[in-house]
Length: 95
Image (cartoon, rainbow, N blue to C red; front, side):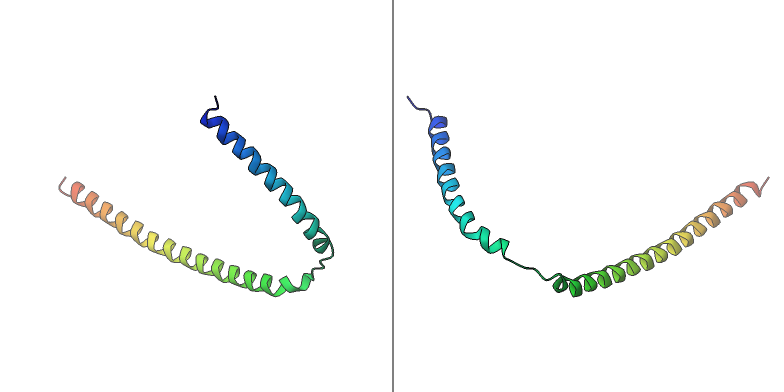
């Protein structure tokens, strides 16, 4: 008696055989056209330049944002240090 697993396995095997047969015919049709295909390397050059310009602009924006964040953190740190200094003065002043 066949189990469900056996039935699924048999169906999968038949499907693979069908795909393999069909695939080989497609490969035999497409392979010569792919071999004869000549690509011009110049078509990608403008796109590469655009991407490089975009990347450079993005990096400049990141650097600017980073510098702004550093300044903000310095200001926050300075305020915190001033608060600590003020608290220390208040604590040590009465003595």
